[in-house]
Amino acid sequence: MMPVNFKGKSFLTLMDFTGDEIEYLLDMSADLKSKKRMGAQGDLLKGKNIVVLFEKPSTRTRCAFEVAAYDEGANVTYLDAAGSQMNKKESLEDTAKVLGRYYDGIEYRGYGQEIVEQLAMHSGVPVWNGLTDTDHPTQLLADLLTIREKIDKPLKKTKVVFVGDTRNNMVYSWMFACAKLGFHFIGLGPDALRPDKAVYEKVLAEAKKSGAVIEFESDIAKVSGADVIYTDVWVSMGEEAQMAERVALLTPYRVTEELFSKIANDESIFMHCLPSFHDFNTTVAKNAKEELGLDIREVTDDVFKSAKSVVFDEAENRMHTIKAVMVATMA
Image (cartoon, rainbow, N blue to C red; front, side, top):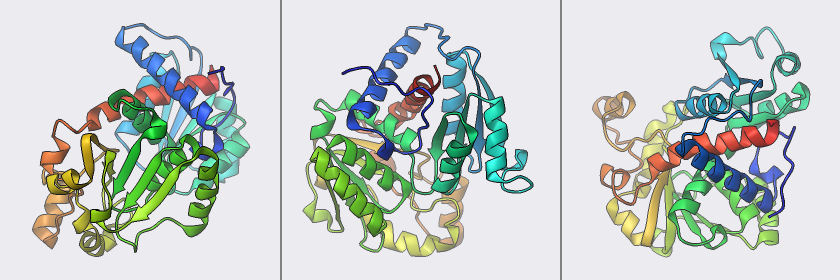
């Protein structure tokens, strides 16, 4: 594969890149992972300054960006919602212009996709999407790298089944990745939770170019042969008021050993972007059970902790793939 020039580009959605460009980032991620495993100290980002903006908190995204930056010699400033005047006393455009004068790169994790797009438009430096309501491209890079490591077949021949809420940001991200790389994606969940029709049609048009298959199904019995079985939490930040309704709708799609065995093949792996409700050892899951009588687990412990589960390898790969994105766009 020929080298690709990413310098100065933002990383907002996989829809902005070709399949070859995504594969290039995965190759770079694998190289940087090997380098870290060997204990080699990097300096590819020496002298660079980055700021990470978190309107939504996260363990993995913050730690992955910070450690990845430090590994290659960059300096990091963390700003949460309380530490920034963005969209409060200062407009988004003005904030972007100021940060672009101070920093060589900006990460944003929060709400609307339009926010990260405006940061990229006005800052004049690379902007990286750490999560929005409709996209999570850095997570997808980590997922794809993990699949390449664990599944003995090309990505293009992989079948990924996402189980549960099939209109969340992870499903959108999976559709975008599938459309670009040409694999088979199935969203398995209730018909009431489906992606925006206009976005779906746009993705299908792109999928024709790569030969991708993107489909949705509500009948578990009609899905089989999954290489990857993926799920995510049922109740995200801001959706707590709909908890009872969502649990009722999604309980048939909890990833149990029984469901896993029905749709898996002999080599299937289980993946999850984390955090996960797989037991009742968190305050949220425990309170939902004890106070509301609701079981909000999207996956059972026996699947989450099984030999098929690669969730912590996947979590580690957040760091390596984020490092590749920063190096590619700033070095």
